[in-house]
Length: 112
Image: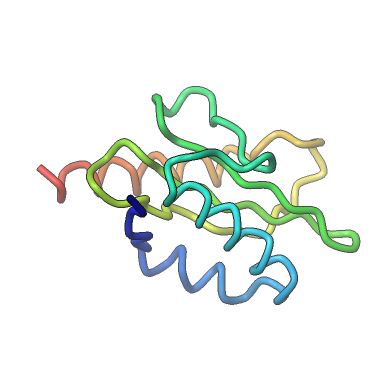
């Protein structure tokens, strides 16, 4: 059974700023998550608990990330979507990790 994909508003706004080709690739990965599977381009995010994944897409010279959670309720929750501007290799910038942690905490409280 396919799960619903629910968006934190700020994550949706960020996602809609991505190039169309990036949105299509990430959209496919989210759809696969909604079907209960994991896309090849989705990787578990370490340190955020089980069921939190990051989808990474490189496009031209830019890098785009979308973070979603699958174990917070019935839905697949899109927590954050951002363009990575760090020069620190593939590591997710600490500022973005803080945003993800804050949104996850808030979402967990709302779903209680």
